[in-house]
Image (cartoon, rainbow, N blue to C red; front, side):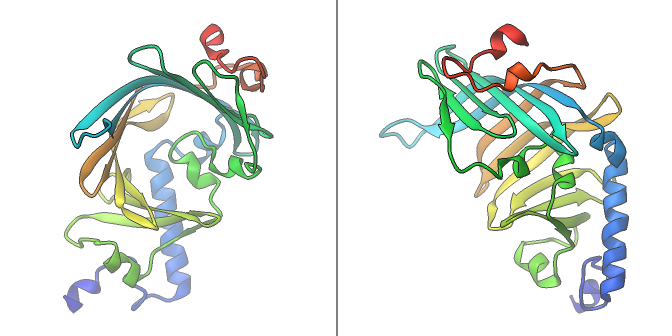
Length: 258
């Protein structure tokens, strides 16, 4: 086992800080090149996602899982250097339960069916978490680190599986990203503090020069809890700022506009 550790790319036992920094930059370059290039992702002005979501829930007084299906539209629009507004509309399969949310750079609000929008306080730093999907999230990171040998061992890392790992942090929140060494594409991720909730990424497709995972599946303790399948992704279609306006009467302006 000690001999095998010699070949682990992130071992701090056999690297000095300068070589670790070099390894990190080399890996980051490979990762961005695999999905269309860093400049290509930095240049995004708008993004529209049409998607289907399936979530596992439990009915009242029942242990059997209930699968709730919704369709949704997610909008992003740049308001600065790699900073975005976002807008969401989700409609359940019964067409009755609808949910909307919006962050316009200043205000975050949500709205449920039959209710006026509710302004959420304390979201001044929400823009830290608004991004145009992986890998644009990495452009907003406070830090991107190679994990230590001890962290790799504690994460259940299997050296027989060809992964490279990066830890991406936004303030106190951190995410461990696992990349295939054969393709340099993201294959799974989990929060640093919640390693048993794992998201897997599948079915990469090239869209306007950028490679996007069309399917994300999330499991907790190996039990399915959520899947999101992108039906269509559109980059850089003009979006009017009124789509992100806080409207006290109704937030459901996406239906008429998109």
